[in-house]
Amino acid sequence: MTTMEIEARKALLIREILADINSEEAIRKLQELVHKLKGESSYTMPSSLLKEYMAQAEKEDEAGLSITSDELDKEMQSW
Image (cartoon, rainbow, N blue to C red; front, top):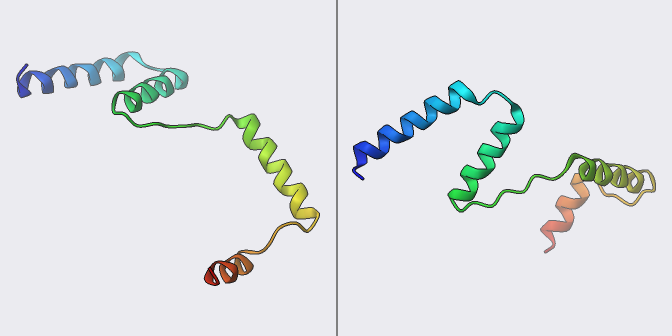
């Protein structure tokens, strides 16, 4: 297949996507497929897991188990 034929097929595919893909879920799946085809790995954390991590972080912060960004900067400088 020539470069021009490939470009024409890509343009046709884009037109089809723009005309026919209307849901957020379909767009997400299409994006994942494109990344997979390109050999990229992408991980999207489920919102329930993110909420769980955030709740745990807030508990640790309330318990005094966290440090400020300035404290972290000082600690990293000593490495």
